[in-house]
Image (cartoon, rainbow, N blue to C red):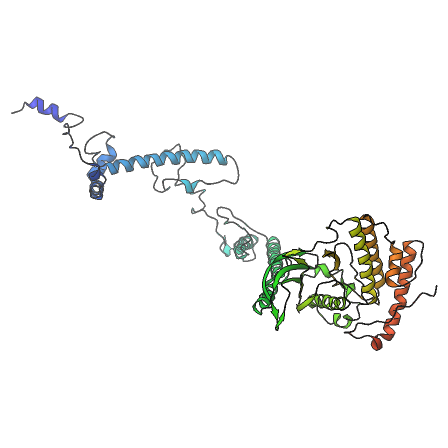
Length: 508
């Protein structure tokens, strides 16, 4: 039998009875789900017991066996304490960041503990349950105040109230286009006046219409390498019909058109050249506003020009180049051969070899003899074009002449007109000026000046001491020629032949 003094001493031990040494266990037993479930059940049973929970809350944290039997509960308590310390530091950072600014930024989304669960905050810290500045709190501004009488009829609030209308206008901003970033407005009593709201609304509608027009213009134009959906469809139809085997890619880009290289197929049992080009005229009208003079005064297209809308005029450009090339081909002038015309796409033979286009006269480097031979070729081509084809190139320069197989080839004749055009002789004078300037810079010795070259090509004998007098005589001839053409056009002109009356000769 034990001594009573020893029993009292044993009961007063603060750490309780010494624990028996724990038997070692394997890692598999520790990590097993069964052991985890067992620990979880023990923690739940501990928390369900009101006496144990009260004892755990009142007694100091000691390393007693009854308090530390559940490792899960201990980990949860430590995690909770860590989260509270993190939120305390977060509050300090928020106060430091905002300072005295009228617009504050909340770090609420970064809290570890929900504000309504954190009930152990100290008095010297911010109480997270204080909703005076909480945007979701009870003091959130009401969007629309109550209407009617307040204060025994002294104050009246109607739907026309300035504050009420301002809040309604702010709420209506949510119906604007998604591109308009309006924010949520939480925590701020925003009021937009009718003037500001109407101005913003009109601006949004204007931007929507502008965006729609830009999208429509992009879909129906050929600004991006002339391949809008309709143009692509025409190209695919040519490939499917066997006219072309395939379309390889873009080889040239200009102000009014884009040129693609393609492999030829067959056209109604007629062979198509092995290498072809597709000249696609751009359907955007910006490039043609200053080029109407080349077609609206051309008697071959004058009547049709006035009856067509601007977009169909682009097709007329392709048709005009086709007719001009046909005339030149009949006269034996080196130029591309027309294969087929589909709306604003003109298919022609390829000037070059093995997918490599012939260089422009501006780019090729020729010797003295070859350059002199090229000059005389150009002189003969201009005379042949004017006298046999009854055409003026109107844009002849080193950029529209190719060098291939030792010959000069003429391209880009969509703007070419007849000499009877109201400005035909002016265009011819400009072509002569470009040709003389280029070959003089190239070092050709026997280059004629622009006046002699003009007379040699046109067969006229205009004499003048300076350019101004020369152009004045040209304009006088053009006016006489225009009156003569208007008088005899129905008798002497046909669309197919394209013939014209001879130019009046100068009596001097």
